[in-house]
Length: 232
Image (cartoon, rainbow, N blue to C red; front, side):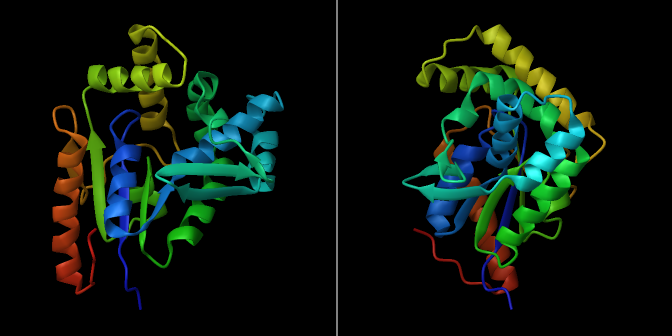
């Protein structure tokens, strides 16, 4: 019998999913799973092997990669066969190509299965683009984060700048708009808001406010399901 909740968070790039989900997991003492990091990892190795556009090879690669996610000191640590790729998967080149890799049906099937295995016993905060609709459609808590495009572009440009890559805000905005279009219109697991998900617009609220809003919802659901949650 499940004793812990499954918390699923979806939303477009730059909506605050990762930061909010990390803090939420810490407050609940749950495991944080960044599913986007898994797609980014596949994309990184696709680029390395120069097989962009070769779907069959990409699907085979995604099945072969031994991706290990760990949440250490507030950050997602990603290793593949012992190699730490945590920083390498956050580059602009990976950003530009991850949506094209993510829309491949075979890739999504393989990674969704891995994600379901990780979270099947609850006690997880999992974020991505199809968590509430495909990975865990029966999740206890469903959240859809959103924000206006200009705010999302500003956040993403700041992230790149902090990593040493200065990009024009218009270029970042165009990249986000392209990703939104691909993610929302792909045939397999498109980015869409589940009807029973709570929408949280993060455009004009702080991270702490976002977390508080979601925690209040978590408390209500936990009470309804008679599941004990201890909030740090």
